[in-house]
Length: 160
Image (cartoon, rainbow, N blue to C red):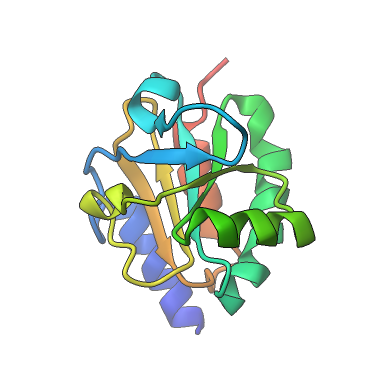
C-alpha cells in the first residue's frame, strides 16, 4: 500500500497518469431550479475539484466527508468544489434529502464528463487548473491520505 501511494504521488509530480493535461468540461443539471450548468462557462478562469460520485456507491460515502474537509481548507484559496453525480435526478434528490453533501451538487444526466475524464468507476476526484486542464486524477479511495489530491490543489491554488 505504501508503494502504491508513493508511486501515485510520483506520477502526479511527474505529470503522468490518466488523462493529465486534458481539458475538462461537462454539462450538468443543478438540484436547484434553473438551467443546466456548463462547467467551462460557469467556472471560467477558476480552478476546481470535481468529485464524481453515485448514490449507490459505498466508497463514495467514505470519500465525500474527506472532500468536504478539503473544501474547508482550500475554498478560501479560490478553488471551486463540485459534486458531480452520475445517477438520475430523482435518485440524487432523494440522497441529498437524506444525506446532503456540503458541496455544490450537480447531476450529469447525459454523461458529458465521460467525454474528457475516465469515469468508468466511481468515486473519481479530478483537480483542474484555471484553464480547466486536468492536474490531478484519483479513482477510488486515495490510499495516500489524500496527499496527491492536496498536492494538486496546492498546484492550482491562485497565488495571492
